[in-house]
Image 1 (tube, rainbow, N blue to C red):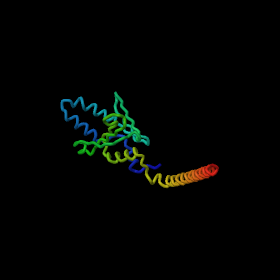
Image 2 (cartoon, one colour; image 1 turned 120 degrees about the vertical axis):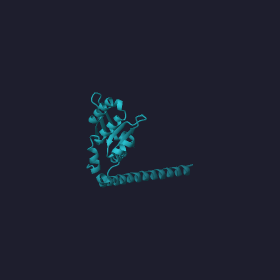
Image 3 (cartoon, rainbow, N blue to C red; image 1 turned 90 degrees about the vertical axis):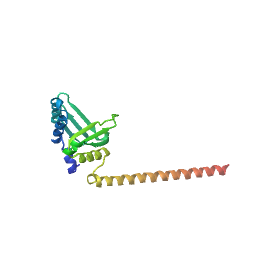
Image 4 (cartoon, helix red, strand yellow; image 1 turned 30 degrees about the vertical axis):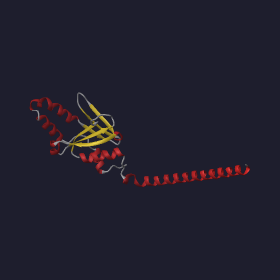
Length: 181
């Protein structure tokens, strides 16, 4: 299975873009008195944030003292949203909110600091729906499906013939019973 170049680029994403740190700094500067207390956790979050896209799902982890990791299988994804505020749009960033059927009103996972957010969203949609690249699976799968359909049609014809023979046998039996009466 050879992934497409777009899929290969997405599977290679392991860190948020450097502009996420600029966004975190600007967000911390919005509250000048609290800046010293807000900037350190933001720096640790940015420095430790890691993504991993695999064939089965997405993994996101961050933290030093309190390590947090979220793993979501593509099959569990229910919906995907893109969200960005004015500053994020100015920096060319967006957040991808991944929702599952876990019962939470909010997103299960929020992928932050991605410049290629539309490509990642499309990749996640294709994985959650099980869409396969026709170039990868087309010829072999089509031949297999045609063979299976022919086999199924032959089995159904055989069943139909047996039902016809049974019906004729029952009709003949019922005709004999009426003649003897």
